[in-house]
Length: 73
Length: 398
Image 1 (cartoon, rainbow over the protein chains, first blue to last red):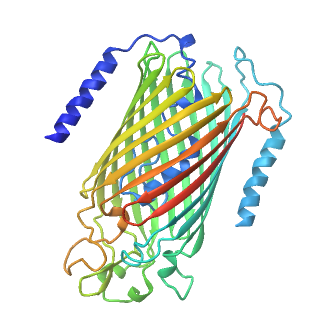
Image 2: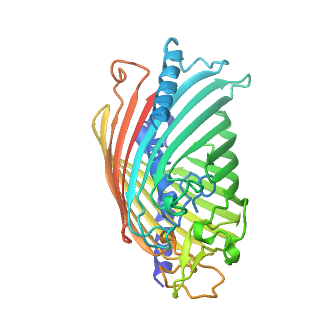
Image 3: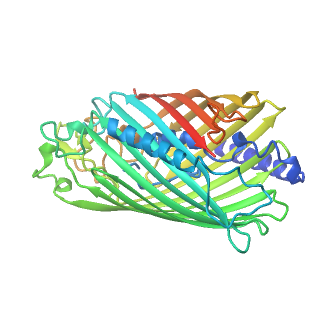
């Protein structure tokens, strides 16, 4: 029951965000283009992600490696 | 160790010196046909952990481990005759690590994954972007080598932006072909344990498809949705991980030869006012070994002025155990699959710390091209005794 509620709420929030999208021109993207607004892991997080993939059972969905190459799971 | 550090620093300074006589950065209206250096990055980290649940000794014993990691990458760009942007990236990483538990595979000799070892991992990638059409494709190859593990990786990706440049779809395929050296605990070499009879090496292959959708919502908010499908086949155990049964008999870890993993994630970044950025991330993960996990991460970047920011962060992680896990001396004889690796047990963890980022307009230390320095510290604490600290440094030459 609980996961269903969480899933429904997540979908509702996501849909409301998508429907509220407003057109952003290139010259209006100064904040979105800020180096710290990047929608990915930063280079300095590389070793953190590596040790987390060794020490934890879950990995992936973070635009990095999701198996192989380091003897980890 | 000193040699490795000096080699990496020497290589980095050599590259900086070699390209420090370049002219001023290209005007954006000029598209160079010649391959030019865009940026060089050096990332160095020091990681230290300790705990009392080592997998090598069956779920008890020291987990003390230290890892010093250095990676250097160089990114080159050019524009081809059709005005498409080409990016060539080369990278090399060197880790030096010491592990107290690895030394327990065979305490008397060095014929094991040794107490101190190195991992070297070069990679190369190429991508081509058509900025007018909003498309990109790329390919890459990587390798990783350490005493008891060798890996070759291949990857390819495609990206397509929407017409209004508000959304972006990315698909990436990866394949890793790995070899695991079959090094068994000393007391099981030549034993009756059928899982410890193999010699040489075994294959482990990983194939994944990663899909993502990024969306700009407004001038301050952007989102990303991520889905990976990962299939692993082959020898997925580690041959030196001991398992003790209820009666005290010792065996080596034995896990299924196939694993299917599905991580689903989302990111949301929001820029408050002119000084504060909130970066958030959530991931739900499940696999066919029975492991389920939640990861939630939040980081704030506080811009104290135009070139200095402070970024405290917090990450929470929780997982259930795999179907084949039991702690030290709790496995019954006769199970088909078994492990006492605490990394596959049920636990939760907290990871918190802070980073600083310096990017002065005139460059660092008066050197214009040497334009960004980032320093970050994190403390990791896990509910089953493991504690770790990590310090990382990122220097960028652009």
